[in-house]
Image (cartoon, rainbow, N blue to C red; front, top):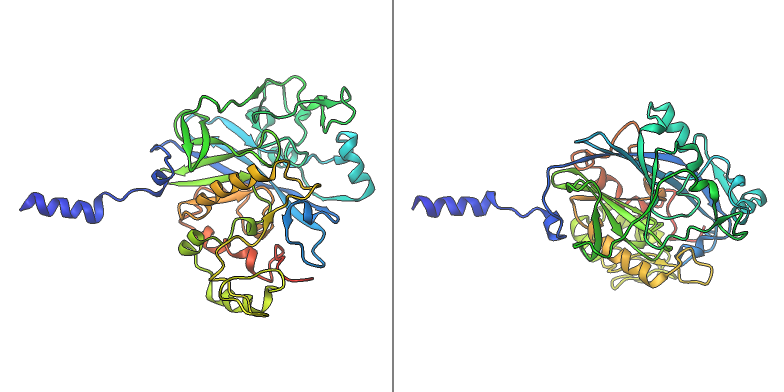
Length: 377
């Protein structure tokens, strides 16, 4: 009788499967601390169509923030940076890129780059063991020439390392690599696969994983940081550029129902000429019956997604984390959370107990939010 009651008790309260195990992530008590930096924002004239579709009238210019992340291994104190944002002098990028800033096609709004923010915050550049590029686009790689040679550089598989001036058309500079130990990740022998994404255990203790997320460009990777034994921050880089490329989906809506006030407001705010759902009517959009994300990855000839089909597959896999209440997805250009995402010196580690996800995941669908794109401007 006692054994029967004890087993019943275990079934009720004792053996609840943590959601991270559903993604095939191993258990661990090893943690990292993650701190985000807002490194400024950038506007690209007439370029929205290069990132996501559809583009409604008046929404042709895209403006987005840039985030960089300090990851500190709690057991050893070792520090790595996941992305750096853009350098403070973009006109000094390789000529193929710098010209866009000189002409005004690209406009940078930045008060302090990552180098100044780190040093102002008491984080010496010499204390950064490794800089990890999610990929080699200019708005992620900063200015590696300012870091001491002791700082390692880690890049994704297949990253194009051709540099200017040896290659006149290159987008990277020789100074991006000079003096640094550069390592290219190799996922081919990894046996870790989370929700279909091949992973590498960076600190070898389950605290911080690098994920192979191809598609945006050659060498694109993401990261998964364990901030409590059961909760994670997904650093999704440029797997997506707008929350509407991931949301809403059935699993997401099941765990994070659209707030009632937005359900009502979206009926008249979303253009039904461009967006539809099973229970929508002309001029009256129904968000609750929408079973697919609002925005698609651009596959146009001038898209910033080099390989749109693999990019979509990577996003589908990453979206499983976004729908999970124990995972906070943070991507590099999320305009919907600017001003509400805690930034350095605050950490993201207590995101769950603070209710950050519940407060912000529907920001993108709020007509008053700067990320709003679902009506003509």
